Amino acid sequence: MKHLPDVQASSPEIPLNLTRVGVRNVKKLVELARKGGKRPIVLVSTFDIFVDLPSSMKGANLSRNFEAMYEVLESAVNTPFYEIEELCVEVAKRLLQRHKYASVAEVRMRSEFIAKRKTPVTAMECQEPVVIFAEAKAFREESGGCPAEATADAARAKEAEDRREGVVIRKRIGAEVVGVTTCPCAQELMKELAREALKKQGRSEREIEEILSVVPIATHNQRGKGIISIEVDGKYKIPLEKIIGIIGESMSARTYELLKRPDEAFVTMKAHRNPKFAEDCVREMALRVVENFKELPDDAVVRIIQINEESIHQHEAVAERIAMLGELRRELGCNSEEAGSLAATAGCTEKEKRQKDVRN
Image (cartoon, rainbow, N blue to C red; front, top):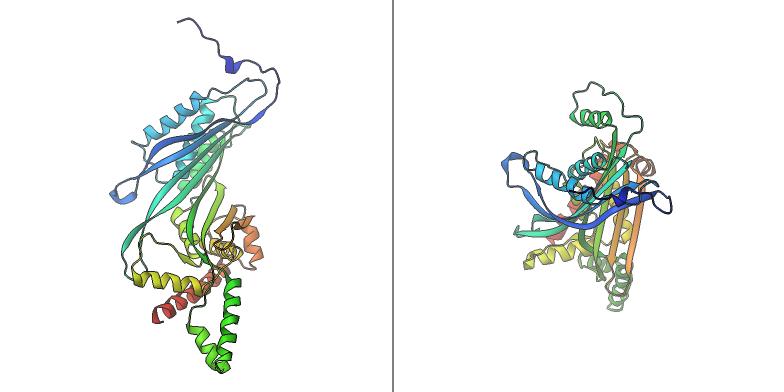
């Protein structure tokens, strides 16, 4: 066959480096293995795949992005992947192998995962959709890597292997979970109205306080969406189920696809006894991240977002915090051990609330 011109490799009219060149919204079927011989998890996933482009090249050969992804997905049959971020890492490394001119490769993956839950009172099984996402960046080391240190730790050995190949890895993993929040401000307003109405009936202060302590006070509700992502070096592993659990426990109450009447009463009572602003949810998630990820380094980057779809307004309430894990530890005024006792106290309080809700 006659040699065909490689237009992408030609010089551009304007010699300028580009940060990202690639493809977005590529849908693929991904199979994740599970330990213990369980059936694999099958995800319909969306990928974004990029490399940087030097000023000397007109364009990137995008077919190589697909080739790298297909290689990794096919090889997963023989060498299974257990985490979505590790899948992204492998694709990013293959991209650098195929795009010799690139110094950075970036892979993003987003999927909807179906989590199994039990309702809080009747313990009926139901399914809840959770959005999970991961990102990996592979940086080419101009020095050609560094020698590996002898170690028995598999994660450190893998990092050393990557560095021998002249590659440095950063990865990010996160989840989006839907829950319920109730407004503290409106609830206090309704409590004052109830207090005035009870006074007009001739109730004593003691009677009023007793009534208000056992009767749920009305407020407006929101469907809330909590988002947490954590970015670390390639050697660290982040259990996705921990992130999902933290988000769910940091709102006023969880949501369930199926609720019988006792379950519905429990969730409604819990939500109204645990009112939270979007700001409260973010702070709660931050505390739980510090407590649950003691093994992560201070330079781990944590991003926390809470989005509440207001019921009596047409806007959304949003709160966000982006910080290194070390910053959160210092701001909370505790090291990882002290954070554990703080979160344990918070968990104890939540347990007492649940017990009280059941009794009432």
